[in-house]
Length: 131
Image 1 (spheres, rainbow, N blue to C red):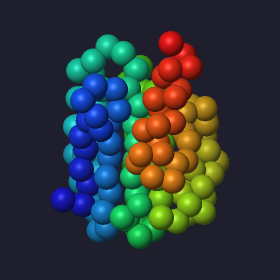
Image 2 (image 1 turned 90 degrees about the horizontal axis):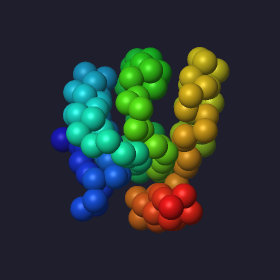
Image 3 (image 1 turned 30 degrees about the vertical axis):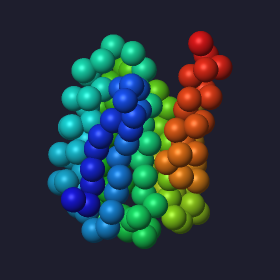
């Protein structure tokens, strides 16, 4: 499947989205709903890793619109959102475009990482520093 959604580790506090081109916004909506169910199944903060490293810079038509809509649907317990991309400059441009569209609630939550292990380590360090 071009998009998968799963718990990233045994403790359900990190959701991993993995994007592999090609995918479309309908599949994204379906997987967004699955992630929402996972988030609502627990009553503590859950971090999200969006791994676009196997996506080759592919973004389908209307994906920015759906990313914007997603930001309005984030459950209360959504923590940090880490984005991994094989094309970091594209990821930053998409993020900047979303901010220009007025999605300021993401500005303090979105981070960029080099890999899934890097994102997980940063999340675990963040959780430890808060505890």
